[in-house]
Amino acid sequence: SYELTQPLSVSVALGQTATITCGGNNIGSRNVHWYQKKPDQAPVLVIYRDYNRPSGIPERFSGSNSGNTATLTISRAQAGDEADFYCQVWDNNTYVFGSGTKVTVL
Amino acid sequence: ELQLLESGGGLVRPGGSLRLSCAASGFTFSTYAMNWVRLTPGKGLEWVSVISGSGVRTFYADSVKGRFSVSRDNSKNIMYLQMNNLRADDTAIYYCAKSITVTSHFDFWGRGTLVTVSS
Figure 1: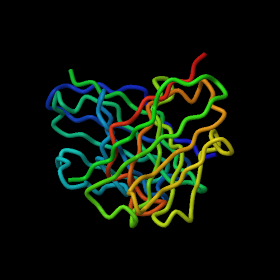
Figure 2: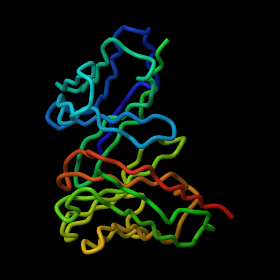
Figure 3: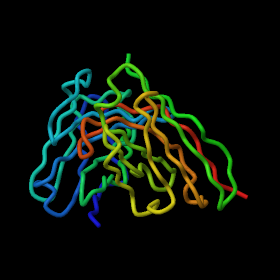
Figure 4: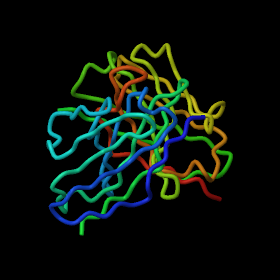
Protein backbone atom coordinates (compact mmCIF):
# COMPACT_ATOMS: atom_id res chain seq x y z
CA SER A 1 0.00 0.00 0.00
CA TYR A 2 1.08 3.55 -0.65
CA GLU A 3 2.71 5.37 2.25
CA LEU A 4 3.01 9.07 3.02
CA THR A 5 5.75 10.29 5.35
CA GLN A 6 5.46 13.51 7.34
CA PRO A 7 7.69 14.94 10.08
CA LEU A 8 6.18 14.55 13.52
CA SER A 9 6.54 18.22 14.37
CA VAL A 10 7.59 21.56 12.96
CA SER A 11 8.28 24.70 14.96
CA VAL A 12 8.17 28.20 13.51
CA ALA A 13 8.74 31.63 15.00
CA LEU A 14 5.85 34.05 14.89
CA GLY A 15 5.86 35.83 11.54
CA GLN A 16 8.29 33.40 9.92
CA THR A 17 7.76 30.61 7.38
CA ALA A 18 6.90 26.99 8.20
CA THR A 19 7.51 24.21 5.71
CA ILE A 20 5.76 20.85 6.07
CA THR A 21 6.81 18.00 3.83
CA CYS A 22 4.92 14.92 2.68
CA GLY A 23 7.06 12.21 1.14
CA GLY A 24 5.86 9.41 -1.11
CA ASN A 25 7.09 7.37 -4.04
CA ASN A 26 6.70 9.57 -7.13
CA ILE A 27 4.14 11.66 -5.29
CA GLY A 28 4.63 14.36 -7.89
CA SER A 29 2.47 12.31 -10.26
CA ARG A 30 -0.47 12.39 -7.87
CA ASN A 31 -2.90 15.05 -6.63
CA VAL A 32 -2.05 15.98 -3.03
CA HIS A 33 -4.47 17.62 -0.62
CA TRP A 34 -3.74 19.19 2.77
CA TYR A 35 -5.94 19.50 5.85
CA GLN A 36 -5.60 21.50 9.05
CA LYS A 37 -6.93 19.95 12.27
CA LYS A 38 -7.24 21.98 15.46
CA PRO A 39 -8.33 20.42 18.78
CA ASP A 40 -12.09 20.00 19.11
CA GLN A 41 -12.71 21.37 15.62
CA ALA A 42 -13.58 19.76 12.32
CA PRO A 43 -10.71 19.32 9.88
CA VAL A 44 -10.42 22.05 7.24
CA LEU A 45 -9.16 21.73 3.68
CA VAL A 46 -6.32 24.24 3.16
CA ILE A 47 -4.82 23.10 -0.17
CA TYR A 48 -6.23 20.83 -2.87
CA ARG A 49 -4.64 19.34 -5.98
CA ASP A 50 -1.14 20.35 -4.96
CA TYR A 51 -1.39 24.14 -4.84
CA ASN A 52 -5.02 25.31 -5.02
CA ARG A 53 -6.49 27.25 -2.09
CA PRO A 54 -10.19 26.96 -1.22
CA SER A 55 -12.06 30.20 -0.75
CA GLY A 56 -11.52 31.61 2.72
CA ILE A 57 -8.02 30.16 3.13
CA PRO A 58 -5.40 32.91 3.47
CA GLU A 59 -2.82 33.40 0.73
CA ARG A 60 -0.20 32.66 3.40
CA PHE A 61 -0.93 28.97 2.76
CA SER A 62 0.66 27.57 -0.39
CA GLY A 63 1.54 24.16 -1.76
CA SER A 64 3.83 22.48 -4.24
CA ASN A 65 4.45 18.94 -5.42
CA SER A 66 7.33 17.44 -7.37
CA GLY A 67 9.33 14.25 -7.48
CA ASN A 68 8.98 12.39 -4.20
CA THR A 69 7.94 15.33 -2.01
CA ALA A 70 4.88 17.52 -1.64
CA THR A 71 5.20 20.65 0.47
CA LEU A 72 2.82 22.86 2.41
CA THR A 73 4.22 26.29 3.23
CA ILE A 74 2.80 28.67 5.79
CA SER A 75 4.17 32.20 5.39
CA ARG A 76 4.06 34.88 8.09
CA ALA A 77 2.97 32.28 10.65
CA GLN A 78 0.39 33.35 13.20
CA ALA A 79 -0.50 31.90 16.59
CA GLY A 80 -3.81 30.76 15.14
CA ASP A 81 -1.99 28.53 12.64
CA GLU A 82 -1.02 26.09 15.39
CA ALA A 83 -2.59 22.77 14.44
CA ASP A 84 -1.95 19.31 13.06
CA PHE A 85 -1.59 19.16 9.29
CA TYR A 86 -2.23 16.08 7.16
CA CYS A 87 -1.48 15.37 3.52
CA GLN A 88 -3.70 13.04 1.50
CA VAL A 89 -3.69 11.21 -1.82
CA TRP A 90 -5.98 8.73 -3.63
CA ASP A 91 -4.34 5.39 -4.38
CA ASN A 92 -5.71 2.10 -5.62
CA ASN A 93 -9.32 2.81 -4.67
CA THR A 94 -8.44 4.10 -1.21
CA TYR A 95 -7.52 7.40 0.34
CA VAL A 96 -4.23 7.60 2.17
CA PHE A 97 -3.39 10.17 4.83
CA GLY A 98 0.04 11.07 6.06
CA SER A 99 0.74 10.55 9.74
CA GLY A 100 0.32 14.25 10.48
CA THR A 101 2.63 17.11 11.47
CA LYS A 102 2.11 19.20 14.57
CA VAL A 103 2.94 22.84 13.86
CA THR A 104 3.95 24.95 16.85
CA VAL A 105 4.25 28.73 16.57
CA LEU A 106 6.83 30.07 19.00
CA GLU B 1 -25.24 27.20 5.04
CA LEU B 2 -23.42 23.91 4.65
CA GLN B 3 -23.96 21.47 7.53
CA LEU B 4 -22.90 17.92 8.20
CA LEU B 5 -24.07 16.49 11.50
CA GLU B 6 -22.86 13.10 12.70
CA SER B 7 -24.74 11.07 15.29
CA GLY B 8 -24.99 7.56 16.66
CA GLY B 9 -21.67 7.32 18.47
CA GLY B 10 -21.37 5.85 21.92
CA LEU B 11 -19.89 3.09 24.03
CA VAL B 12 -20.08 -0.45 22.68
CA ARG B 13 -18.51 -3.73 23.72
CA PRO B 14 -16.00 -5.56 21.51
CA GLY B 15 -17.84 -7.62 18.95
CA GLY B 16 -20.84 -5.31 19.07
CA SER B 17 -22.45 -3.16 16.40
CA LEU B 18 -23.26 0.49 15.93
CA ARG B 19 -24.80 2.58 13.16
CA LEU B 20 -23.59 6.11 12.56
CA SER B 21 -25.57 8.73 10.65
CA CYS B 22 -24.49 11.87 8.84
CA ALA B 23 -27.26 14.36 8.15
CA ALA B 24 -26.50 16.88 5.41
CA SER B 25 -27.99 20.23 4.54
CA GLY B 26 -27.12 23.32 2.53
CA PHE B 27 -26.13 21.54 -0.68
CA THR B 28 -27.53 19.12 -3.25
CA PHE B 29 -26.67 15.96 -1.35
CA SER B 30 -27.20 13.46 -4.17
CA THR B 31 -24.60 15.10 -6.41
CA TYR B 32 -21.70 14.65 -4.00
CA ALA B 33 -19.70 11.68 -2.85
CA MET B 34 -19.54 11.26 0.91
CA ASN B 35 -16.82 9.89 3.11
CA TRP B 36 -16.21 8.60 6.62
CA VAL B 37 -12.88 9.43 8.24
CA ARG B 38 -11.79 8.64 11.80
CA LEU B 39 -9.32 10.28 14.15
CA THR B 40 -7.42 8.44 16.83
CA PRO B 41 -4.79 9.97 19.13
CA GLY B 42 -2.17 7.45 18.15
CA LYS B 43 -2.77 7.15 14.42
CA GLY B 44 -4.11 10.52 13.33
CA LEU B 45 -6.62 10.72 10.49
CA GLU B 46 -7.61 7.45 8.86
CA TRP B 47 -9.96 7.25 5.91
CA VAL B 48 -12.70 4.64 6.41
CA SER B 49 -15.07 4.60 3.45
CA VAL B 50 -16.50 6.55 0.51
CA ILE B 51 -19.81 6.30 -1.33
CA SER B 52 -20.63 7.92 -4.64
CA GLY B 53 -23.50 10.39 -5.03
CA SER B 54 -25.78 7.75 -6.48
CA GLY B 55 -24.69 5.18 -3.92
CA VAL B 56 -23.59 2.73 -6.62
CA ARG B 57 -19.87 2.90 -5.91
CA THR B 58 -18.40 2.22 -2.49
CA PHE B 59 -14.83 1.71 -1.30
CA TYR B 60 -13.40 0.77 2.08
CA ALA B 61 -10.12 0.84 3.97
CA ASP B 62 -8.63 -2.62 4.41
CA SER B 63 -8.92 -2.24 8.19
CA VAL B 64 -12.74 -2.17 8.04
CA LYS B 65 -13.51 -4.19 4.90
CA GLY B 66 -16.03 -6.92 5.61
CA ARG B 67 -17.06 -5.35 8.94
CA PHE B 68 -18.31 -1.87 7.98
CA SER B 69 -20.90 -0.95 5.37
CA VAL B 70 -21.65 2.52 4.01
CA SER B 71 -25.00 3.53 2.52
CA ARG B 72 -27.02 6.65 1.84
CA ASP B 73 -30.63 7.76 1.54
CA ASN B 74 -30.71 10.65 -0.90
CA SER B 75 -34.39 11.27 -0.21
CA LYS B 76 -33.50 12.08 3.40
CA ASN B 77 -30.03 13.58 2.80
CA ILE B 78 -28.45 11.09 5.19
CA MET B 79 -25.42 8.83 4.94
CA TYR B 80 -24.93 5.84 7.22
CA LEU B 81 -22.08 3.71 8.45
CA GLN B 82 -23.04 0.30 9.77
CA MET B 83 -20.20 -0.97 11.96
CA ASN B 84 -20.19 -4.65 12.96
CA ASN B 85 -17.78 -6.82 14.89
CA LEU B 86 -16.25 -3.75 16.49
CA ARG B 87 -12.77 -3.92 17.97
CA ALA B 88 -10.91 -1.78 20.48
CA ASP B 89 -8.85 -0.23 17.70
CA ASP B 90 -12.03 1.11 16.09
CA THR B 91 -12.26 3.56 18.97
CA ALA B 92 -12.09 7.03 17.42
CA ILE B 93 -13.94 10.19 16.53
CA TYR B 94 -15.77 9.51 13.28
CA TYR B 95 -16.23 12.37 10.82
CA CYS B 96 -18.25 12.58 7.66
CA ALA B 97 -16.92 14.68 4.81
CA LYS B 98 -18.18 15.60 1.35
CA SER B 99 -16.23 15.44 -1.87
CA ILE B 100 -17.11 16.28 -5.48
CA THR B 101 -16.31 12.79 -6.67
CA VAL B 102 -15.19 9.52 -5.15
CA THR B 103 -11.55 10.39 -5.88
CA SER B 104 -11.41 14.09 -5.02
CA HIS B 105 -10.52 16.13 -1.95
CA PHE B 106 -12.82 16.60 1.05
CA ASP B 107 -14.08 20.15 0.88
CA PHE B 108 -16.26 20.16 3.99
CA TRP B 109 -16.33 18.11 7.20
CA GLY B 110 -18.70 17.55 10.08
CA ARG B 111 -17.70 17.92 13.71
CA GLY B 112 -17.61 14.21 14.42
CA THR B 113 -19.10 11.64 16.77
CA LEU B 114 -17.14 9.59 19.31
CA VAL B 115 -17.17 5.82 19.18
CA THR B 116 -15.64 3.94 22.11
CA VAL B 117 -15.20 0.18 21.95
CA SER B 118 -14.48 -1.21 25.39
CA SER B 119 -15.59 -3.95 27.74
